[in-house]
Length: 187
Image 1 (cartoon, rainbow, N blue to C red):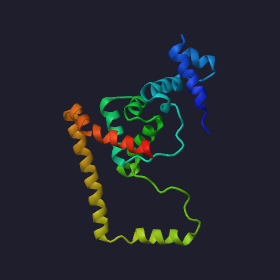
Image 2 (image 1 turned 120 degrees about the horizontal axis):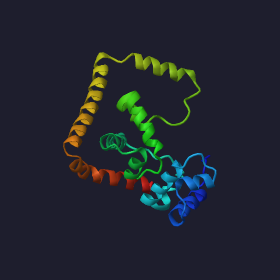
Image 3 (image 1 turned 45 degrees about the horizontal axis):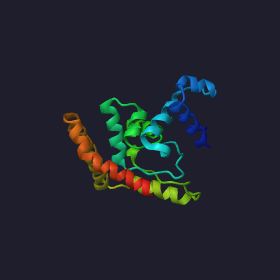
Image 4 (image 1 turned 60 degrees about the vertical axis):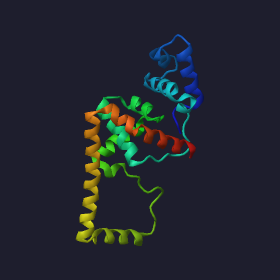
């Protein structure tokens, strides 16, 4: 369950925007340990309206490219997690924290979607999977390595293009970001 409900968030954002208390004063008034959540709520509200304060009922699935774009934007511009979330119309900046950690620890593979749900209770399929994984032919291993190198190469090309001209890069990819967010909103 969420620590703060939607009504509470709306109350604090409204009080901040239309009242005369700052972040720290509001945090003290409502016995919050930090003013950071209030700052994040106000920022989300300003960029996304009430939708930025609502807890989403379903988990949205973002493409690997979308995740890479968000992390890359943050690294290149020096934007904070919250600023990056606002830029990419995410109401939870912790997603970007997770994506950044996954990218650092596992590379691009860490950004790929994982199967959902519990694994099967049967032990036989697990043994079969392990045997299948171990029995990759030399050709299959090379194909896998090739694919990983292709992904890495594409990432590095985009990074180079971004470094050369960030504004042109954003204009080129702006349409994709907007179309991705529209798809998610309609789901």
